[in-house]
Image (tube, rainbow, N blue to C red):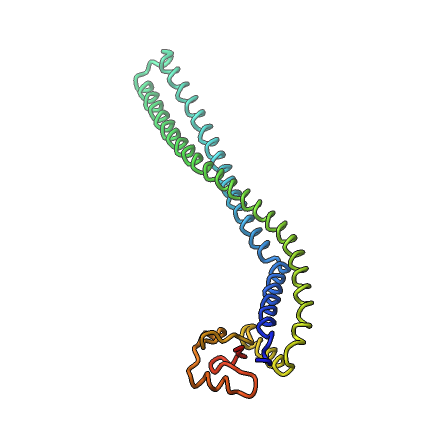
Length: 235
């Protein structure tokens, strides 16, 4: 076991350093903050779309209201003219009556149109309120991510520096040939160059060694390695 003494300690330290470096890269790239800001921007864009819809509906409602007002004035004027007695010709009175009926029908149609617009506006306004709330929540989340990322980066840098400082002295306790093989295997084995053998199972690939394989490993004159994944085995 002498050749692999402390090798698992080095393996665990290296995995910790790898994890810290990956996390540091993620923070440096700002991927999380970028994602949070993109979500917030999208939410604000949806809120903006609701506001534009409300503006359009308000313009449509105003236009219809003006049309109703204009038609109502015309209908009222025709009704007053009919009631004034100034028109006595039966055919002309009939024409005025038809015009009044037509105007009232158009007013009714416009009032129905206005009601539909107002109902639509009510639904859009409710959606706008919800969109505004969601946008605010996502923007607050992005601000929290920005603040926490800065704090985490400072803490992570300190921990990474400390762990990297530990490595040389720990690596010096390992046989140079074993260390060289371990360093060669790590990039090939997803960062894991050495693994413990527990109950005849390699903890690197989780394959169980047969009695023959186990005997071969134990009798090996050089560094013991898993017959399946070829990682260094710590017995």
